[in-house]
Length: 128
Image (cartoon, rainbow, N blue to C red; front, side, top):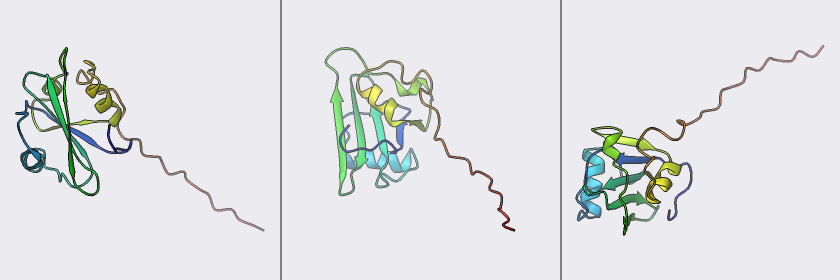
């Protein structure tokens, strides 16, 4: 994917999207339906009703970008099979698999949630 790092968060809209929508309309969907700010650096996936095309909206630091892919064969997986409303959280790896046409992406979560390191208890050393 263009210009994205691994730690970026990805959200998929859990409803079919009209692929004629522009930057402004997709940004409005992100704000209103998904409750997120499109300028925070996250990536947002939108899939057409026929599952032949998908768009990813993201902020690259200087402007909004839209990546649009239309499959010549086959169909994309349907995000609304995992959840019927709101936003579906995905990992960057899951987004990459989706863009490649994998059908496994929305069957269930393929990646664990974000891993936060535990604090290690430290004991004070007493020097005598």
